[in-house]
Amino acid sequence: HRTDEIWWVAEKAFTSFASRPMPEMVAKANRAIETRLAKAQEPMEIPAFCQARSRAISVGGGKTVGDGRFARAAGDVAAFRRSPEYDQAVLGLATDLATEMKLGQGAATDLLIVGASATDYVGHQLGTRGSEMCIQLLSLDHSLGQFFAALDKTGVDYSVVLTADHGGLDLPERTREAGSAGGERVDRALNAGVMGKEIAAKLGLTGPVLHGGSFGDIYADPKLTPAQRKAVLAEAAVRYTAHPQVRAVYTREQVAATPKPKGPPDGWSLLEELSQSYYPATSGDLLVVLQPRVTPIVDPVKGAVATHTGGWSYNRRVPILFWRKGMTGFEQPLSVETVDIAPTLAALLHIPVQVEIDGKCLDLDSGPGDTCK
Image 1 (tube, rainbow, N blue to C red):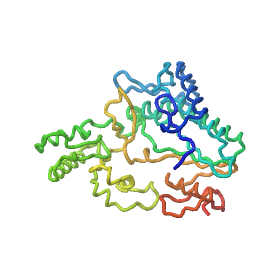
Image 2 (tube, rainbow, N blue to C red):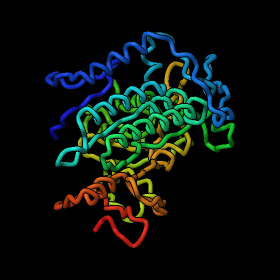
Image 3 (cartoon, rainbow, N blue to C red):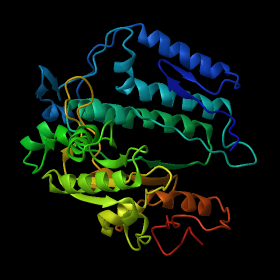
Image 4 (cartoon, one colour):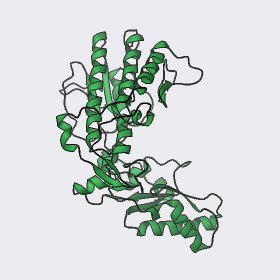
């Protein structure tokens, strides 16, 4: 695809491919980030709606999360990226791109894709149900409102699609307090390197025999002989299956042989879910599924406190919102998929889809009309 402009934040400035010249609006955005970073950020105001969520949760080592308000020292790039400031910078540049490039004001339809990703950073580093995430989401809502207001001023007829790439799981220390069964951190013994050493000792092998993390794709070392590989994977499957934090273990052969699932995605089995992300060249020799709400971070003191745990609904469910001026709002009661977005937009833009693709067109008309026809 040949884009007119493509920019992303690296460290503390927007950057792009080496051969792409930087227009003044991007240079302006970078100067604004530099100026902002040079100053300390005072604690942000906590909205009344978020006050009930503001409570310090200990994760060990004297570290707490849950009552933060995004105070930041001058020059702290990491804190800048995991705060509303980051999305404000991204949406600020998106606004300038839309207005200065006069998007939507020519003969063809223009596409503007914006990645406001601070929510992901906040969720991993600080959790999903504290004051930090509450402030972040309300701030993002406000920043999106400003962005759409700027688009409105152009008089352009535009459509919006809003979605996310994944859901999330809060830190287990807080989910346990809320009465959520199974909220715990993963046992270090499930790490492929740790388990591999035990298996190597039992089988009389030297060197690493397993690679990977504590769940998901687990790989046998490529230097093993076929017989050694078979023995290592068999022993690993037995050990993973026996662990109380593991729900299921599948071989790559099992996953590869699984037929493409039919029906709504909320009714798929774990094996069917795994089959949809299986790729022969890179997927693991074993695929390990942890029990619900087991967080695969052993030590949250030095880095992230929350992350993803496989195919459970809290990881898979994301919002998908379509909007256009004059549209009558309604909620789709059935589960849909993110792959439905492309054919839905194609129909909205009257672009014929002449090849087989994943996904289906979603009717955006709340009445008897059908935007897919």
